[in-house]
Structure formats: structure tokens, C-alpha cells
Amino acid sequence: MQGIQFKNVSKFYKEGDSEFTALNNVSISVNPGEFVAVVGPSGSGKSTFLSIAGALLQPSKGNVMINGTNLKDLKSKELAKLRLEEIGFILQTSNLVPYLHVLDQLLVVKKMKGSITAEDKRYAKELLEEVGLGNKVKKYPDQLSGGERQRTAIARAFINDPNIILADEPTASLDSQRAFEIVELISKGVKSRNKAAIMVTHDERLLTYCDKVYQMLDGNLELMKKQPLTNH
Image 1 (cartoon, rainbow, N blue to C red):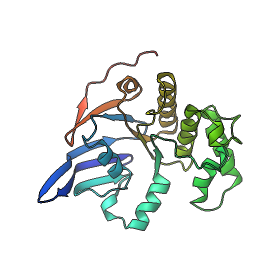
Image 2: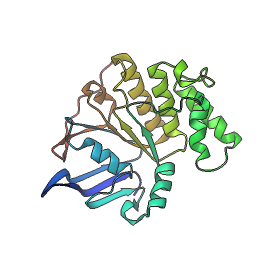
Image 3: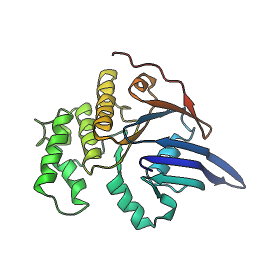
């Protein structure tokens, strides 16, 4: 099955003699072309959930499937390869490399897989055009606005043509207008390239761009009723 699935996933942590449940029997399925949001207060389990979805953290029990592959079956080297090839990350801060210009921010990710081809450069420029940075390819991070840095991070997340996009509070450092623009860009990329995407966010105004909204409370994940899309 394509996309990402959690099947009865739990994560426990030891705290002295007691056990803390960060995730409690979570099941969710996100299909290609679907953009899903997860909301909830701090400490509810959202970060643990996203870390497990990104193959950065192992669940205590249950199964996580990415494009039909059970992550439980993979060794650490195979997990690293899967993260590079199958998952695109968009974080709270753009995490750009200070000494690389915009185009190389994307190509350095390509280089992790091997040599860079002319086709890779063409695709990187196409992605940057899509996010409105076609005229900024030779700019460095300190020459960009906060919104432009996040646009670069979005393009970078798509450069390896991953099947899964994971966004962790991607608009946390942006004003409202820029926040809407960034989430709209992520949504367009997910739809046009048929990716399965999960966004963790505190900003409920952005949820109208998502197909489904889940709430995380005390490690439990529940589907919420979503509001219809409105114009901003």
C-alpha cells in the first residue's frame, strides 16, 4: 500500500519507576495526494508522532508502513536511505546551510544520493520557480526574507521526489499572510506531485488547506470535523 500507515502504534518512556505514554495505540492512514494536519497542545505527543513517521524514532509497539515497507524490518542504514529517498522534511526553521546559495541548498540533498546531473539542476530550478524563487537561485540565506527561506525549504523537501512530506510547524516564525502562502505552496506541491503529507501545526487558521484534521491529546489521535475552505 502506498503512502504512510500507522497501525496501533504506541510509544512509552520510562520515568524513574513509572512509565509515560507519549503515543497511545495510534492508527492513521495518509494516502498519496492527501494533506493531513495534526493539532494539539504542547506535550500531547505530536513531536513523537512526527519523529516516528519520519523514521527518526522507533515505536514501542505497533507498525509503521511507508509505501508498503514496514519500518520495523529495516536496519539503521536502510532507515537512513529511506529517510533520504522517501521522506521530505519541512521544519519550523528553514535549516538552510549559511554558505550555500538557494540552488545549492537543493542540490546538496541530491548529492547525498550520488552525483548531480543536468536533469537534477533542471528539476531544482523548476521547483524554485514553482515556489516563486526563480530569480533568487544565487542568493544566500542571509539575503532572503523568512518567507523566502521557508519557500527554499519547501522546494528542498521535494527535490528527491519523496513519497512522504512531513512538516513540523512550518509557519511558526512567519506572519499570517506569509503563513497562508507557505501552507498553500505545500498543499499545491502535495496535490500536483501526488505525495502523502502530514503537517503538525498550532495555527488552526491553516487547517482549511488540509484534507483531514486530527487532534492529538495525551497521546491519543482522533479525527476532527474539518471546516470548509475559505478565502483569506
